[in-house]
Length: 98
Image (cartoon, rainbow, N blue to C red; front, top):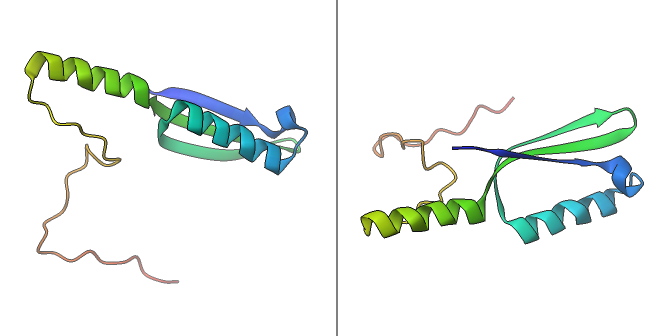
């Protein structure tokens, strides 16, 4: 699987948080990325947002192509699809509060 990278620099929108938010939201609405990792860092006085993602359209195309070949693949888009759940008899324990 190949992941893609997308970065946004607040310098591109005059360091306006509202404009940066609008850029990110427009990208998300247009591309429907499946975000796997997000990072935020500073570049001088500017905020840089970085996303590692899967292209949802590309992923759907691959699943459709596999369906055509096998005819029985179910659609799997869970964020944690490659992780196996723990034993259902063991209750989930919340992290300790500090």
